[in-house]
Length: 347
Ligand code: SAH
Image (tube, rainbow, N blue to C red):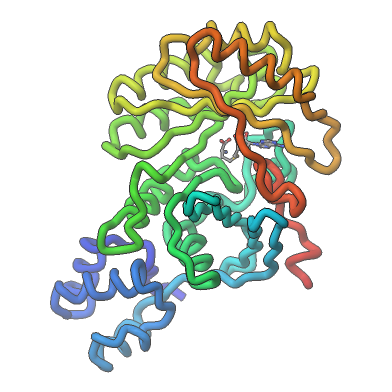
């Protein structure tokens, strides 16, 4: 313990560590960074262009974070849900999603558990346990790349946890994934989804990151949103929408509003009309998600007719809207279904 977590470091930080702590040449940092983030090796002994002496020094001082695969479930559509064990025994889930157009996407977690308490989400049930380190965030991508011998092209931070409440590690992980010396995932192919942590949305707008920001809206008025998402009591819609509007002005990037449609709760025509009034004029796109079943909750899925009607009201008002393609529902890998199960950890 007390070892340096090298996978959480960017090239500059690695250089600093190598030159000041290990009395090595700075260019070694680039070599080590490539081994970790591009070639995806998991031992120092595999870093073949380092001297044996340096490999030994690294082994003594440093640590390479890896994840253990506890279970792996494949759905009929090719989606694979992984349950990964972290080095302290905690577990998280990640979902691999291959698409017919060649995109190789992965949905990753940012925290162990989640403290946001959204009433329709399975991750909320166990509460918040801890934040993930940058290494644990990027390693979800690398572990899947190693397992499947694929190159991930798209990353969505829509797994377990609230990414903006683990701000520094999440931003660091995004920059590591986007680094041209590493796995080099295009920044516009990285989506960060938040329940609406207003101060951090404002902070994110100043990061100069062209990522895709998705806001989990799910309700068009405060009364309903307070019921579904407790965070709304802290950051009500007027504040959230104003932060979103500022975000689009600063970044010139379109925001995605996610709206999980729940039968009889938020799928009435009046809700669609309220939604239009709320976001009209904003540079945005609405993504409708039929609510996914979560064991123990009695939320109903909207009928096709309701969903279509809801969508038409939005699009007739000139707002771009789509219905999210459902993936991995047969293995509980769909949005909001990720939950650590103790039985799986023990088996
Ligand atoms: N905390 C972040 C990211 C994780 S949740 C956020 O709130 O955005 C990823 C997405 O799944 C969010 O839009 C969340 O609201 C949605 N979600 C949660 N439970 C769901 C369910 N049962 N059906 C459909 N979407 C759900």
